[in-house]
Image 1 (cartoon, one colour):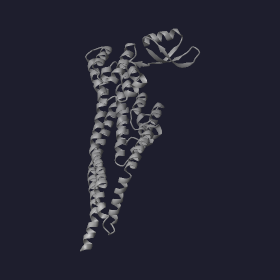
Image 2: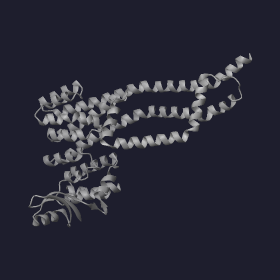
Image 3: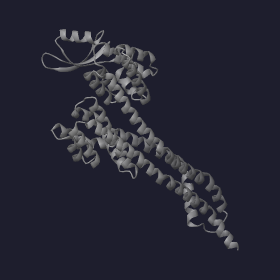
Image 4: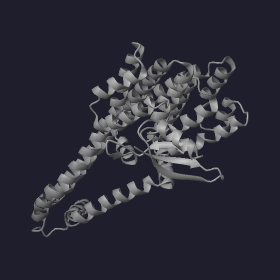
Length: 403
């Protein structure tokens, strides 16, 4: 096996080199004989696949697959099976090929004496930072199975919240898509047939008719150019969003969106408070828990607004005072955090805050839908009416001229 190691020499130099050994324990012994101090070690590959490649592919791991894995692992641990034996059974049952490769590496690390939390942390691109930290707390307290179940509960709540949000937005998205499709069909196929008829008329067409006919001709003549421009714009925007500055700007713009901006802000705050509550309930100190919980927030703009809290708490400021100074959380959340710190039940209070945010997200989504759905129907009706009116106005003019 090949290992990438960060080692220190007797002269004080720190370097990163590749070593070969049968396992990690043998490697540590060999390095100590050479007078080298081992700072960090990681396997270079498993089953012919390098770890960087596995990490890249591991990002596609389905959340539902990971949730099922944790359910089975918690059940095996609760039944009294040793950890290695439980991992062996999980390996036999795992159907996801990429996850099975990574799980084999985790099992190998644990068998060589590494903690389960460190083995999962070595594949940080695949698993949420919250997960290895929760496992570390469970290993220290001796309640690994309970910590896994608590993490499963957290994952289910987050998944349910996202599913409700996506389900609520499906109907408006369909309305918008149908409106655009109907507009294109009328402009490209229906309007041109009337245009040929109007060319034989000597009368001047009304302004509305000329506008619709001109728009239809523009769509037909420039269709390929418009499609290429749209594709290029999407590609460039996606690349820009992948940059740190672009991502920050994009997330900030999303929070300023009419109607939906407030919902996205509440959802980000719910992610933070629920993650922090889960970590504190697992026994992780406040400052490390804050660092991990902030990283779990999907919106980088919200992360940037919350991060100064960590420095304030590290300097000795009360957590609720840091929340208040950040000017991100509503007064209710600050008050509940204050009560939680005073009573020693901060994790319970933060869970209640997250539940409140989730309920408010669902309420606001329903309120937005009650406004968007009729607005979209009215818009579709007005567009169809305007197009039909523009097509028949010249006929009405011609009939009145004949009379």
